[in-house]
Length: 231
Image (cartoon, helix red, strand yellow):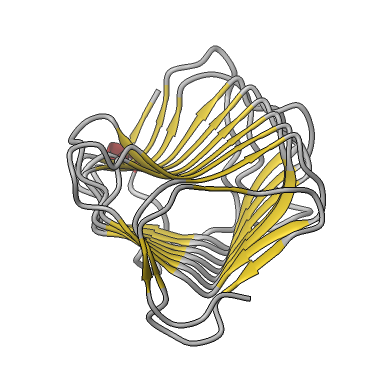
């Protein structure tokens, strides 16, 4: 456990370590790294960037960890998971500011990752990027709003990438499917996402496969507007 204060040391987690703030407004200003570790938790902190070298707030590689109830503010990349597993839950991610290149949550070559009940809002860039998923990836219950890039971007996604019960609004594009076939809702397994008022398109699909996005709410009882979809 970490006492209230402002800490300017870069932290590297070890297996079995829980990094937990004892009080609100416990501030970390340097990167937290989790590489080749198991059963780690980062909970309750304000991770505060804002400098030119504020590249990664949390970097995890070949790790299994929980990232919960943090405020991650003003970084180029808030949470990056590479070849990892874990839970990203109830965080607020805002103010990512490397325009065109920043991300809220970046998930690369991962499996068994749950991104649930977060607020990923007001970032200069894309809120969630999922690339080369190797297994189950669940994106559920998140507010993804007012990001200048895509709300969610999927690259080489399989149907094991499941996107449900999110509110995705006022981004440049709601969902961008670069390639692959994520699960955004079927007749037997409702998407239950609320996707509307994104600036350019609600969904774009640049891949070769048709994408189902059934049983979602599109901002009007009339259903989706075909002009708001591309691909």
